[in-house]
Amino acid sequence: MFGLDTSVTILLLLCLLAAAAFEFINGFHDTANAVATVIYTNSLKPWAAVIWSGIWNSIGVFAGGIAVAMGITNLLPTELLLDTDIYHNIALILSLLITAIAWNLGTWYLGIPCSSSHTLIGSILGVGIAFSLIAPGHTAQYVNWGKASDIGLSLLLSPIFGFSFAILLMYILRQVIKNRVIFREPVTNAPPPFWIRLILLLTCTGVSFSHGSNDGQKGVGLVMLILIAIVPGYFTLNLDKKTTDVREQLTEVRKLYSKIDANELNEEERFEYKKAMTEINNFDTLLVVGKTIEQFTNYEKADLRKSLVFLGKSTKILLASKHLNLSQTSKEALKKSVAQLKSLTEYAPSWVILMISLSLGLGTMVGWKRIVKTIGEKIGKQHLTYAQGASAELVAASTIGFSTWLGLPVSTTHVLSSGIAGSMVASKGIKNLNAKTIKSIAIAWLLTLPVSIILSGGLFLLFRWIL
Image (cartoon, rainbow, N blue to C red; front, side, top):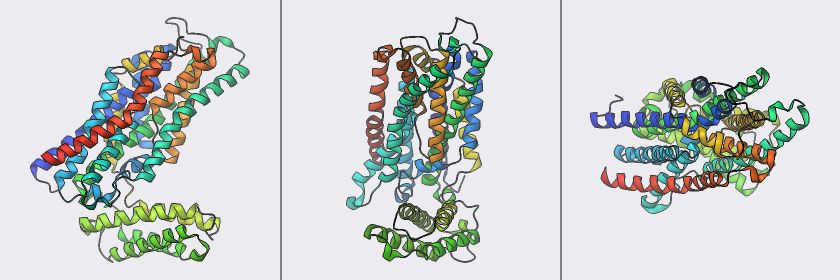
């Protein structure tokens, strides 16, 4: 397979299987976020809820694009992913996979809603930090801290939004809806009125779909990390792209950059402009006429990938500048042209998306009871009402969907758990929260990143020494 020897092929297959297992665990770990409300309001039977949620999780993976996946992939620099020693790359992949799976399983077993996003991102950061400790010279940056800070901010703010907007939505519902049945606890084993049932089914569908479109992409990004690290010759660049098309896109980018008057930029922006022009020239030099993408050496592919990453960063900074002397039309054209050029590296094969879609969907259908019980019974002191369930899920689906559109990973677990907490507070105040459960969730939230960073970093150093 891919020209690898037998031992490396086996390790590659094991890594892919582990990635599928991570997404499978993610499915049943996070299923509760979608199905707890419809189960605890008697809107759907548990078996129907998890099957319905699993289907929409799978659909979400296909519909969500790959922006979040590329955010995961770009957390580590190309030179770390493309170590010439294949066993060093395998050490990297195994470290983050074992960490992510172990922490997810542990928190699931304890019934604690915990973020798969925090776990995966912490594992990736741990590997990058550990590598920086052993890298020659210690001068290179082996974590994309800019991207990491963007992701960290989204993971931090999304639960706050979930909590706040759930309170606001509950207030609006109380003012607008005169039929008070929506604010009552469900009658035991009795389904809600049809219109309430329909609303809850729609919000369950929305959370399931948005979870698939965001968390599913994390699995896609993880698989792409594996493929780039172990078989870079096949996956560093999109081999289906034609060099003639890439050259046309590069020509358009150069043409738009030629319109920029560097004298009007400040010192930092002029530096980014010069850096971008250097990468454009480097890219142009590498694009030999008549040579297909597949014919490039691994070194050339890595060089092209790095040039695109640097060009993308510089372009983003320049487009945000108030000194940039381009019309709005030219700015939009530049943004679009660079995005088209970056499709050479920002892609995922359809079989990868299918694998993650099936893993997430199937995982959604099993192992869901532990977390469902926590969300449905233990976050608040009262039984979940129809309004609370609908509010929390509507807020979660909206927040996650917006984050996916921005290309930022967020924690479905934390957004919906905080939404449930917000709806409980909106009903009877802060005293309506179960302090013990909230404390457990908060501790897991605070520990996930540092534990996953330390564990994955330690495993990486261990595996580097062994392999």
